[in-house]
Amino acid sequence: MYDTSDIRKGLKVLMDGNPYNVVEFQFVKPGKGAAFTRTKFKNLLTGAVVERNIRSGEKLEPANVETRDMQFLYKEGGDLVFMDQTSYEQVTIAADLIGEAHDLMKDNLPCTVVFFNERPVDVTLPTFVFLEVTASEPGVAGNTAAGNVTKAAQVETGATVQVPLFIKVGETIKIDTRSHEYVERVSSK
Amino acid sequence: MQGRVLAVVDGAAIVRCADEDVRIADAPRTWNPGDLVDGERVVRAFAGDYPPPSSEVARLTRARLTAMRDRAAALATLRAFFAERGFLEVETPLIVPSPGLEIHLDAVAAGDGFLITSPEYSMKRLLAAGAGAIYQVCKCFRAREDGPHHASEFTMIEWYRPFAGLDAIARDTEALVHAVCGDIAHVGAREVTVKPPWRRISVRDAMRVWAGVEVIGDEPAEQLTTAIARAGIAIGPGLAWDDAFFTAWLARVEPAIAALDHAIVVEDWPAPLAALARRKPGDPATALRFEAYVGGIELANAFDELVDPGEQRVRFVTEQRERGARGRPVYPIDERLLAALAEGLPPSAGIALGFDRLVMLATGVATIGEVQTFAQHER
Image 1 (cartoon, each protein chain N blue to C red):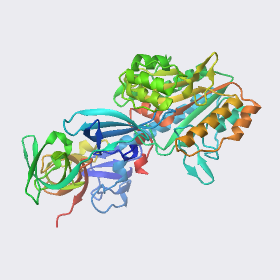
Image 2: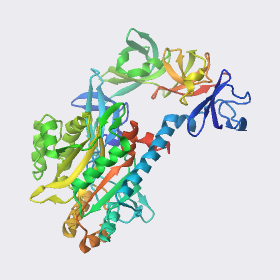
Image 3: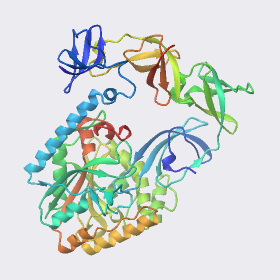
Image 4: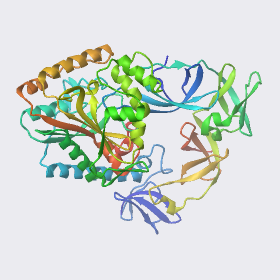
């Protein structure tokens, strides 16, 4: 069983027989009251989001999910296609079920696919991905007025991230898939 | 010109100076991003790409530095406010043997004692000693609190008026928030009016109107749980009275209060939530306590102080037993406080107000970490 200290994004729990994914959580504590974790859960089968306040000390039942390492093949409309590299079996997942991280997925990216009752319901990306910058304005001094020393850059998958001014088109950058944020430039050798 | 070069673009430089980030159109050609400059001179050259990973300058953005200034200004306003009203500023110990027995607060151990979760006990001893109207600005510490409105280390403003009641404290609170924020407080992008006088609602009315639950105050926990379930709020069995109450409060009342465009005083708390408040004369199911809310931020909690040493001891012993039953550390009873109560505390009212939250309201900054200079995860 999980308790509130285990709650984090991506935690899979079973509520009323349905598997849910934690998508957002917040510590709340009314004066003189117990601590609660205000949590948004996404139904892994339907995508519906419910909010519940979990009291400190309350237990959550883990969802019995299986994970398999698979390779991301390609996007097809709103779907993502993955392949098991041992069995060559392919599975398809709706992109909107996994949130904004899918725009950091490059073909052949190794991922972890989550199954509930044999059905693919979620994808975990590697924490960091390395992507080439395909478009970015050169730094514009006016934009840096409020101490804002970043600029928008587009990477090869089409995602846009904020990067420091010294980043140029053609360079490869490391991005944290949990926060969607630039981490560092990767030197090309 | 003294500061750090943030960027150099087309011959122009942006320099972070103490007050603002300044653009220099024709920057010296010797300047590179990251350099510390004094006049035209580079006093420390930065080697490599700027900003580096985990840059302090990138972390503490200009907006964060501005919030620091707003925080200092709010503190100056607050001290002038209390000085004008004849309050004495006091400093009481931060490390104490008895950090408080409130059931849902855990203290942080420090040497042979604990860091305070509130300065309340020491300040009441000062009231007994005849210190008069007093206020304090101090850090308080509560283990494992970390959220948009919570940090395990935060700044409390606490003040007491001897020979006065809750109305005087409510007026102080309204006037103080108004002095710091003006007519309008900001909750993120939302505007909330804080112009005195503030509206008031009783806890029972709030629960009836917003949650559809009738709260009596001395009913058994099971009865309250049933009433909450009947109102369509998800609630499990076997909850203590306060846990059942707050399940409904968080699900329905707090979101409704958060949506108001004006500050509100929530008063007349049911006796199980009295904490250190006196009970209402002639109505033992109700405590003389209020909470001030501004746009969903729970800003302050006030008591008409319990001054009866006998009842105080009973509450302490009950809280110790309750803490033990819930598996929480049991702290010693503050015998010096009880001795002070036995000697005689004037009838008094007092309040604790979260200063970081007040700065959030003055600036529109959405999370406590952004007004604390360094957030909890940045220590």
